[in-house]
Image 1: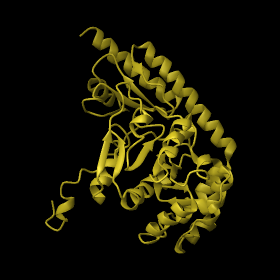
Image 2: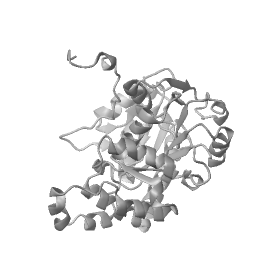
Image 3: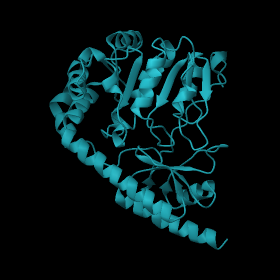
Amino acid sequence: MSRFLDKKLSSLESYLPGEQPEGRRVVKLNTNENPFAPSPAVVDAITKEEVQKLSLYPDPVARELSESIAAYYGIRREQILTGNGSDELLAFCFHGLCPNGAAFSDLTYGFYPVYCQMFGVKERIVKLREDFRLAIEDYMDLKETIFIANPNAPTGLNVEVEAIEKLLKRDPDRLVIIDEAYVDFGGTSCIPLIDRYDNLLVIQTFSKSRQLAGMRLAFAAGSEELITALAKMKFSFNPYSVNRLALLAGKAAIEDEAYFLKTTRAVIETREWMKRELEGYGCEVLPSKANFLFVRPPVPAQDVFMRCKEEDVFVRYFPGERTGEWLRISVGTREDAQRLLEVLDKIFEEGSHA
């Protein structure tokens, strides 16, 4: 470790992204990417003429994209702030919107504890129930800013909007931040609540249901006062964090509703088919509202993870007391899923003869 690194960061435990294999074709079901290409409208929007404009700075307020997002959700442009992926927006939240600390579940998006450590925010960890359910009553009387990934990762379980609304009503002076990275695969967004509750901030990404993980694009939706506060931080850090091509791609993606509906429906159908097939092998599979499944195989999960990797099928394994028996498997194409099942056939057959 460099002697020049500030000592308060020397023990920082960085977020560990899913493995990105290079140099060979693999079935990649470990990073929750969308198996479909971006909307054809995105390809059409990124023209040679627009590429030539890369010598110019992008619009710092993302006016046209924000107007399209606002129109889609029936809110005002002033209630939207775009960012360089949801990670940037979440970082601002932890940095500036947690005066009493941050509360989140013990099994959730891995960046939350990283940001607490990075920005010196006191964290409160709230355990999920034994069945991995997030019980909203466990958060009712907390004073910290509450972060809920909904649907949750890695479990895929969803909290109903009505439960979140009870949380918002309980303490109007406590901020609740809903991270809706996977909401379009079967959940219900809390964005319609932002006009009624100024203690609600919703963050969504274009990485999952809009197929733009490589563009790094997201937005926050909330009251104008909250968005102004977030914008103050963003414009004190990097007002040009969303590049010109990302602005074009995001606008085209959110305006192509037909493609969005077609592809999210296909992911949901494949997810439910995969769930049935995996249960047929004797796996326990949680009821997911995301583009992945949380699966407990009938043989040790780490062994399945390693054997799949040997067969160039990448899934995600999280060592730990509560997660060590489980795998997170992204929903790919039917062909990807079929290859996974072929490999599992071999693994479980080996296990039965062990």
